[in-house]
Image (cartoon, rainbow, N blue to C red; front, top):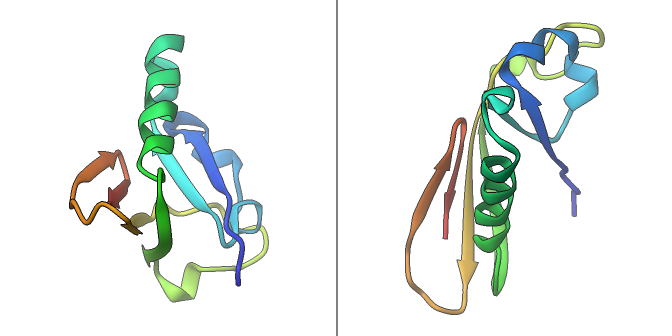
Length: 103
């Protein structure tokens, strides 16, 4: 099993990260600096709640393979779709900027 980390990067600081910094991780690319502390905490809570009772998690990443991992290349934006299978069978969808979670 490949472990992936969730990274939350402010839109304005993306240029400081290289592809090797974020390699194989799921990166949120939103405008965190424009959000209040309460809004950020609520987003984290909403994000985490999607994983309650999860049985399996599949991740689809829209990434240009040529740019996927080249040491010292600056990070390019990606689109992530996370499919979560849970016990309820209810299908919902939440979008967090470039990350869509279907659960």
